[in-house]
Image (cartoon, rainbow, N blue to C red; front, side):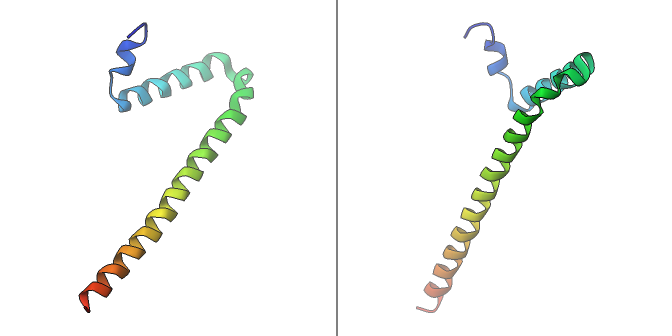
Length: 76
């Protein structure tokens, strides 16, 4: 597995917590000098929002379609 084998075998929650702690420590040590990373974070969050919005839209349309099908089948 290599040098990070233990990391990839841990749960997702633990990996997120480790990343959170490393981000806080980096921010405290480096300070404002790490501000150049901000645009990457903004792009990452916007991409996540885009994925969530598309999936919510798809699930809404799909759920509406299924409900219509069930209502039509009840009257047959």
